[in-house]
Image 1 (tube, helix red, strand yellow):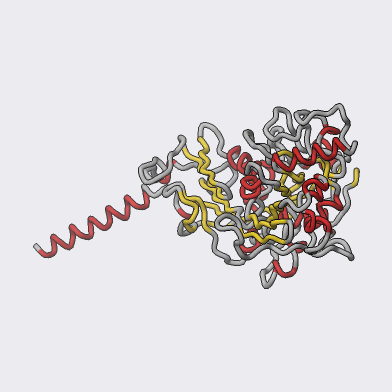
Image 2 (cartoon, rainbow, N blue to C red):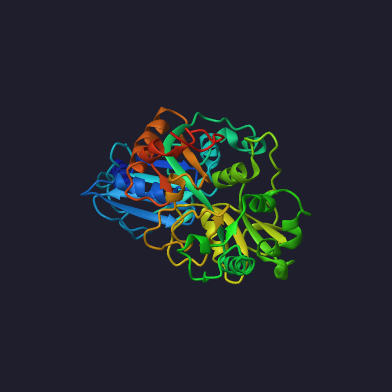
Length: 431
């Protein structure tokens, strides 16, 4: 009798173990996890999804800086009662050319997150089973490194610290960047520049598809906002620095990215000359306290509130806030509809065909391709080992054949037009 009970108990455990392995979403070693650039988050999602080849179906679980993509024999639903947790492992299908059926990426720390995750820094990911962003990677998941907007060695030494910089490889694509303004700031700059003659009198505020009607920010102006000087003209005047004396002293909000961000490193390189120039300007520090209750960490310095935005989505959130004067740098792939912010011209040149994101036909790359817009950098990836490098070789190929990507320039166009030869500090020149 006792032996019978033991045998029944063993059988129950064995059955539970079998059920757990058969019905536990993809096996851990079929899940790839990554951290890195938020600048290409949208285009990277499209590339990964393209590797889930029909008749299989890709399902995306996206929340701010967190994206998880699942490839299965049918679309899956998340949550405790969803099909993600009830499907057998065999129903999840590998992405073409990869041994993974699921890809999770956290871009909250920006490009340098790539180096951090390869150095053992723990990251959390969006879990389709729980639909939260705070779960660790599943047991057995494979770390595949990530993408960088700039070469890792071009981050400030204080950011690099004791981290090992793994070899990076040029993906063969370039990411275009731009300066964006909240609706309130855009309107104020338009009025000021029209009154002063910088924008023709024939222009109307709604003429966002006419390049010369879009307000422009000069490279030295943006450098002044980004520089570490509490008493320069930008910090003393606030919004008035960009939109005229009538707005002197009104708070300007600079949605700066965190130090680990590749977008921030790109902006520091382009506007401040760091670290390529021998006479680079200093950087206004990333805020470490929260002057305003809730929200991003921020510091009010005279008339500019500097904000530490972890990911691109955090910058968009600030730019969309009504009635506030906000400025920030973002990648050109940001083309979401129903946004209130607009692109500014940089040194008189527009990033795209319209200042309003989501407008049909926007490329946010044509002016880069014709050599009149030079705020772009060539993306690199670091896999950390042969497994990670193989992952990115496959993904890079997919990125290079995306149809009409916004803000992204593929290898063919780079090879035929203006490029930096894969080097962060190189100037842009035509072949």
